Length: 190
Image 1 (cartoon, rainbow, N blue to C red):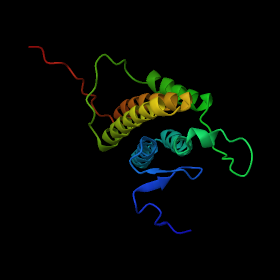
Image 2 (tube, rainbow, N blue to C red):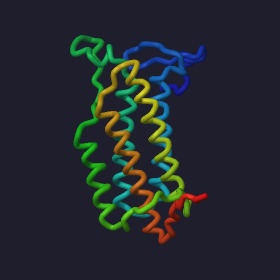
Image 3 (cartoon, rainbow, N blue to C red):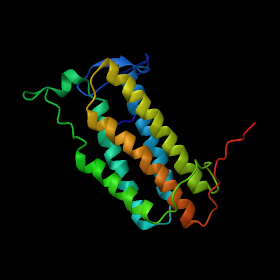
């Protein structure tokens, strides 16, 4: 299989099912940003020393590939149920979202209560986790824009929303594990 196809040389790309759209189409922006997020989560996983977190991050990366496949499928192709044009696209389900919630609850149990916003940083692993969280939020914004134009499975939006929360809590956990001081944001009063 060749990596280069030359079919995108004129600024278009194919969605699942063959529909061609400009490379700047909101659907492409949406799943492209999910791909960027997936790459950053891979970096966080590589930097992470906790095996449980590594395993969870690997699972999340697998789910993000599923999410990308969902976003790369236009609604009219997704609905094909039979025939040679049928696309067999995997789904995100409630269990995927519940896993993120369960993981957050476990991490939160070992963390001090949060009384202020915290400044991202303190260690490269923590900083990269916060960058992944920001990319996740951008991805969520793009998918909500796509959803205004073409329907998107509501579980995709829920997953991205929960994932950004998970990444925030993971950043706090990594801060604690690495014995880094969490710097609180105290608004300057005039």
